[in-house]
Amino acid sequence: MSKTSIEPPVPQTIEALKQKIDSLNRKGSKEKIGKRALKAIENMLDHPNETAVFSISALAEKNGVNASTLTRLAKKLGFAGFNGLQNIFRHHVAETHQYYSYHVEQLLNPQDPGVKEEMMHLVAREEMSNIMRLTEQTEASLLKKAAKSLVGKRLVHILGLRASYSVAHYLAYYLGMIGIKVNVLGALGHKLAEDLAEIKESDTVVVICFRPYTKDTVTGFKMARKAGAEIVSITDQTISPIHNKSVNTLIVENHNPFFFDNTASTLVMAESLLAEVANLLGEKAVVELKKREDLFEELGTEIK
Image (cartoon, rainbow, N blue to C red; front, side):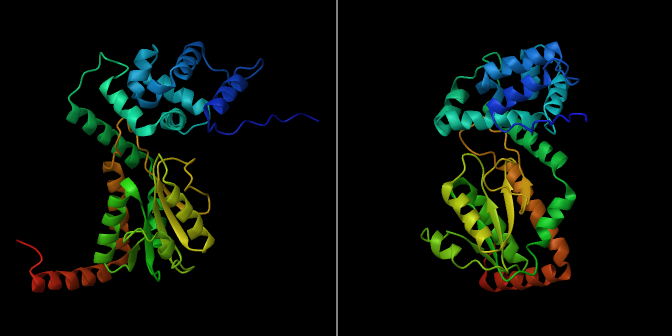
């Protein structure tokens, strides 16, 4: 009877990543990592901080390999692409450093002083990179499934606290414009507990949360699941505490070397979700929008 080797799962931590590398490089392994790629990943493990924030091209140049070599390495280690591998380092840095002050220190004292860039260009480049990854990695079927879960419900609740609150409010405002009955959780006087108590099995809850994860948001996510509501999670990685196989999850990878959240890609996801919902509603969305336009006209709400 032949022995069947069990392949280790996709690494979720730095330690698991090291074990995966050791497993692949064992004697007799058919999936050995090449010498140059092995040297590159070992150097990346020695410098997790820069690995967490450098772009793939900068890391490739620093380690004397091509960007395609790092992509192939990531896939050999079990990830869909390099971003999955880099997320291990980002998560590690977030856990081992005070998140906000650490990012400001990195911004003021870059580990690669040879790279000089105007601040606006740096921010814009990171945002555009995030948006491109979003468009390449988001499956249309997942977005449509999430949109369907917002239509025909008794109530759609949206939970996004702290920095995610702006996206929660934006999403709620425009869902309301097209006739979706919506409630922003914890919006008034921080009455989150009272709001969570109102969630019913016939509702949908949209939960928005990114590193560093807000405890109340994660608790709210768990309570919404317990209530039996359908859930749409908008988060940054598959190891996020608001990701689960039983919920609709929209991943927005947020490569963020700053002390603030990169919100452009998150808003693109919210806008895409709104467009899908409007498309599903069809003429009903137009009727609801016209009702509101008539009210705006009567109240003189808008200056044209």
